[in-house]
Length: 240
Image (cartoon, rainbow, N blue to C red; front, top):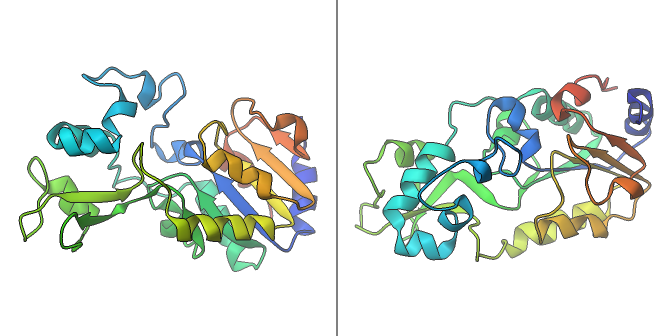
């Protein structure tokens, strides 16, 4: 197992760190992930979460979609944890170029991070499907049943559902910053969800650091590997 001293040395000597994170970054804030033993995919609902969180289901079963979405996806009372706060600190120090995240909770920005590429969108942004008027997550949470716009049309969260493509501008920005990184820290992700998992192939820098509770497909190619909680590990790093 790699040592915290090695990670500290890499961070000290890096100028363009990019952090690529998944659900495991937010579990320490109390937000459930999807694929662990107690994750959303292993809980029992009338429909599998993968089906509920699809574009087809949203269109055809909007009420059931929102019942699940409000109950399980809108964690508006959760706060940034030590991982989010350390990354914001690294950005302020000029060490971290960007955060690329698969999460939709907005906690990186809440912690103070400015350059965040949200591959799967954000629950904090919601738009009318017809007139594109913006609505807050609080409005969605407090609405009865299906949230509707003032114009009468259904409101949709700005999150990437199954069957939907990623936003081109977000993808190009994320890939560019990964290509220019000297250190890539991958954390809290199984690296099994594509296309996001394929982003790692664009990294050609010096140091690939992996932090995840369970083994991943790139463990054997990483410079450092930690099977730890992301926040607890990053909290030990001193920002100089």
